[in-house]
Figure 1 (cartoon, one colour):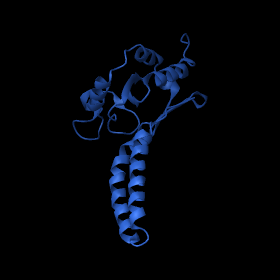
Figure 2: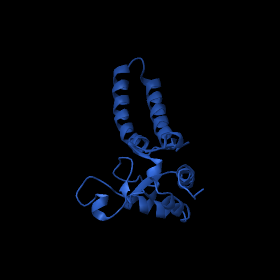
Figure 3: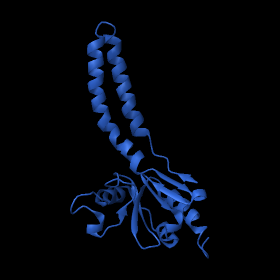
Figure 4: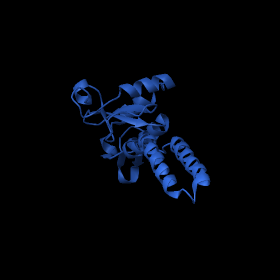
Length: 179
């Protein structure tokens, strides 16, 4: 079983700054100015929500879970059988050199599958982005694999080698001659 852990550093920093700022204002304001302090805290909360939208969307659309016992690969909101994944494409991706930081950011900017004319992956001849998101979040790597039916899939991941190793181990069990 493999579950990709999503980094929580950005969320912790944003929430920490919000809590420290609200607490600092509260020490000077409460109990005399509790109403205005609550109003300002709510306004700052409205600023916090956009800062947390990317980590929340990563948790919804880019969470990866491999469960060989149930023959299941879950990426975001999508589920597929591990037996549908072509093991040869997984082993091919393992042998590819990892991208550098700048290359990873550039690749994530170009990996879009939005439901807008001209930005759909099928229209551009690009692999379909798995998980339900419209693009790969900046800084994440995408791994291109194929299904046994030949469909090209792109999966966003934080830890490319750990994901591919777990996927290779899970898909090789059902394939004769590969292990």
